[in-house]
Picture 1 (cartoon, rainbow, N blue to C red):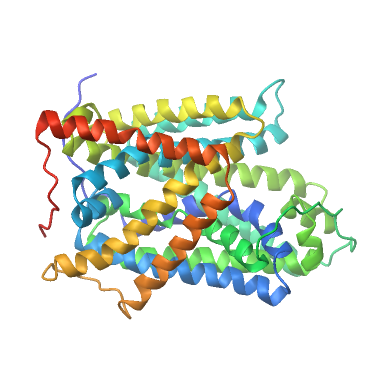
Picture 2: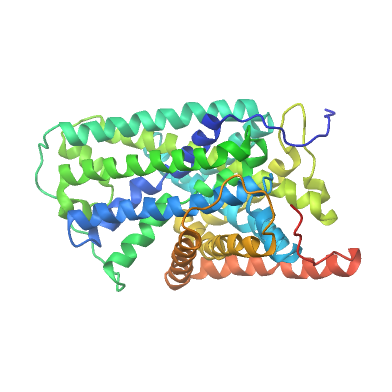
Length: 450
């Protein structure tokens, strides 16, 4: 079918982008991380402080991204910021990593979580998790290829359904008196790192994903006025939900009960003697992760579209379908790579853990570089119009950069072969970069245009 070429238009309202932020962040993490955070907290107060601190660090990062996105709005998001700060070579390596490691790996790991929980509800013979994971990638890629309008309304439905379920969990934990007081059986701990530091690793991973809003900055209505608002609103909602959910957990199970739990939400439901609670929780988690996969697919293809615009070698990714308001070719290629990673993960003992290791070091490396890019661009382009400026500059960006550096260290220290594989795939972009420089006279100068 023929389609008309075009470029992104400002078709997303602030509520659409808030839905994207909330949908991508509130996913698998909040159902996995609280038990580990509790196990590494000295008291209930320390645990709640960790979640509040995670929201604060995320807010600092959001303020940095708000200045970057309103000063340099682009469908390329971080790719655009890194290119302007460091030059096209770094920009290319980031965009390449999004294509083969970051976004596609994130899609795959979320798909495995979706497959794990859906497999509990509707078990299949054999590789239930892998089958459901592959089906989710195919279905949601097709949904996004069909157009932005359908994708965004699907996202609205799943995000607000997820929030409604979270409210139900919060209300149950805070209102209903526990019927079971004994904590779940203790799980053996193998950690040898400082307790609160490990707790913060899991907290910050659970808050991860809000930065994806940068990739729809070119499609946000009145971006210079609204970007800071949607980022702050999105993180505010997420922080409130996380604080209340953990308060419900600890009130029902206690700190010790949380720390000994493998499935903290289900154990909370059992403690409340809610017979259908375990099934409800599995369904809720599946919906939340499905929403995260959808928005990860949506935002990831935007970077691939930006890559194609700037590098002729990847020109086949640069078709923007005006009728669908979507980068259809980029979506298709991204879906194929994510599907291949699902097959790789399905062949290992734990597809989720393999994909987490694959993604983490590369993710935190470029997150750190994006934070530094704010400082670089303030220096290199001092006259650029900045509708929003980070308050308390340079303290806020420096705190954010320090947090990213710690997370980069942690991701290298606590991951195995999967991390090495991710770094190898990142490095595979270097020969292509050299080839393009030799064959196309690719400029390496830093772009400082407003």
